[in-house]
Image (cartoon, rainbow, N blue to C red; front, side, top):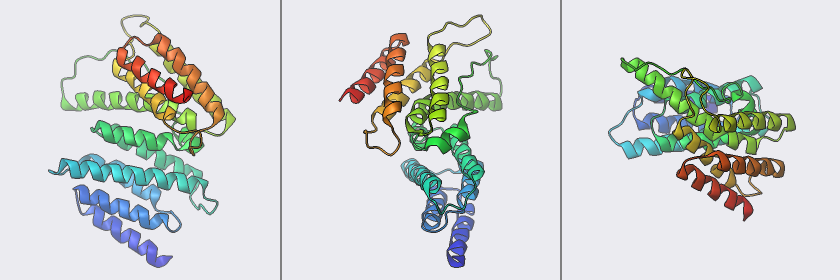
Amino acid sequence: EPGVRSNVGELMEAAKRRWDEKSLDLYATALEVDSACERAWYPRIAAELKSRWRLVESQDHQGLAAAKLNLVHRCGAVLRQTAKDSRNTLASEELERAYRDLFDVACQERSYEVRLATAEQIGSGGDTAFYALRAELGPTPKEVATPERTSAEREKKEKERRRLIMCAWLIPMLLGSVSNEADRHSAKSFLVEWLAWVGSDPPDDRKCPLPLTVEIALGQGFKAVANRRARHFATCPEARVILAEEAEELLGQSSFWYSQLTLIQALTLWAL
C-alpha cells in the first residue's frame, strides 16, 4: 500500500542519517514493515547495508553486535519468505543479488559471531542462495602473497581470508538446504573439491596450502548442518546421507584435533 511504502522509505531515510547501531535497528524495522506487505524494498536495503556496513560504529560494542545479529536474522527470514511466496513480485535476479550483497556484508564484518550467524542465514537459503553464490563457492588457492606494506593491502588479504572461511562454512550448509537435484549435485562437486584441497600438499612453492582456519570452518559447516533436525525446513534425507559420507572423508584427512572433534560431533548428531 502507498502508506506502507512511504513508511518504509521514511525509516530508510532516518537510517541513512545515523552511523551507530540505531541505524541498523531502523533498517531492521523497515524490513519488518516491508515483510508484512509486498517485500519489494529488500534489494535496496541490502545494497545500502553493503555500502554502509563498515561505516557503522558505536562505543556500545554489545549493543552494536546485538543490532547486527538482529538485522542478519531478519534479512535471512525475509529472503526465505520472499523466495517461497507465490505472491512474490521480486525477480529472481533481485533475490540473488540480495544474497550476494548479504555475503559481501559478511566478508566485511570483523566479528566472528556475526559472520557465522550470517553464514547460517545464507546457508538456509536453499536453491536461490546456492544459485546466487555458485561463482564464489569453489576453493581458490591463491599465490603466496608478499608481505603487506599498507593498510589497504592488509585489509584486502583479511577480506580474502574472511571470504574463504565464509565459503567453507557455506558449502556444507547449502548442500544441506538445496532441494533441486541438479543443484545438490553441483554443491556436492564443490564440497569434493574443498576436501581434495584439505588432503593435498602444495604442488610447488607458488601455491598456498589450505589455511588451518579454513579446515576448521569446513568442520563447523558440517556441524551446523548436523544441528538441523530431520524436519528442519532447510534439509532433506538425500543431502543428509551425502553430508555424513563427506564428513567421514574429511575426518580421515583432517590433521587438527579441533577439526576432528567438530566432525565427530557432527557425525554423532546425524547418528542420534
